[in-house]
Length: 370
Image (cartoon, rainbow, N blue to C red; front, side, top):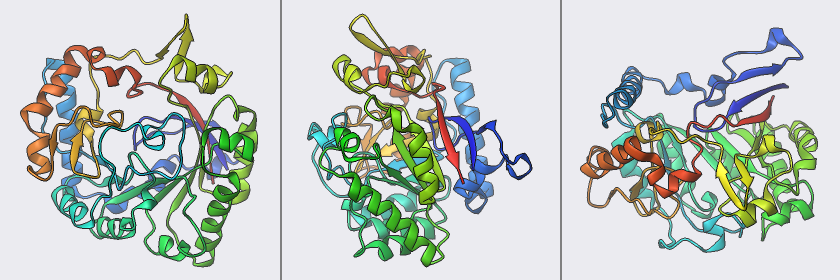
């Protein structure tokens, strides 16, 4: 097991060694192995990534939006329904003003057909619990047939003896399993409507059956959002992950929407906060420079085909187009998208959703990997 820090702002990150028990066995390319990136690289995708990076650099240098490539990664929402009522989640709280629904398999296939040549990383989650959508296995299979890496984030409460073999038969490349407490009190303080018993059972069943079936996928990441009520369990969760046999444990900082919730949820250890809390207000540690790489490297698609700029637009307030009437490329290169990028280059703080954004913020999060 190795320990190191990383900045959790994108699908791609560079690990920095913190301490090594067996230095000779430590592999600097562990992040590459996590996503098995070599399987998904093509010359066209390399060329596209170069276009993305170079056009972003040109944009911030010339202070005008220039886009030469297509996104490297995407977040696609299987559903915005959820089986929990987490206090800081608009989906679980029923606070979303946009309609609730399920992504259709044929719509997902159409989208994959549009992006498969240049993009190679799809996060099949945004708002909601992905496994509520019964078409999720078909989506995973279709994307992987088209040489696209798939990551799914779940609360694990729908993993059971009945469906475990189906889940593993159509396993994503990476499965993020969120457990934010190691007993009922700490777990249910935030994961309202669920139980630690069920989450723990789902995780252990998944890992046990994966081993029995000798499956290589999924790479299992245990995610633990550090809060005031569970920060005393940090050492325990690292041990819990090791004993369970997950591939990685990630301690994640929490997003909050109000000063009151900050007082209730943010941990005492400021190392695990992304906010400064003072004078009855909260502000993110990010300096919010007038640029954002996310607008060049990724995009988010809601269950009903709305294209929004990033994962901080949870209610699709900044809809840039809809796939029912336009192709993704038409939306990506549209005047509306260009104007949005220009707005960020001119004055990022003028966009309300950006004031709670971590893009470019180096938040160190401890993690452990097998």
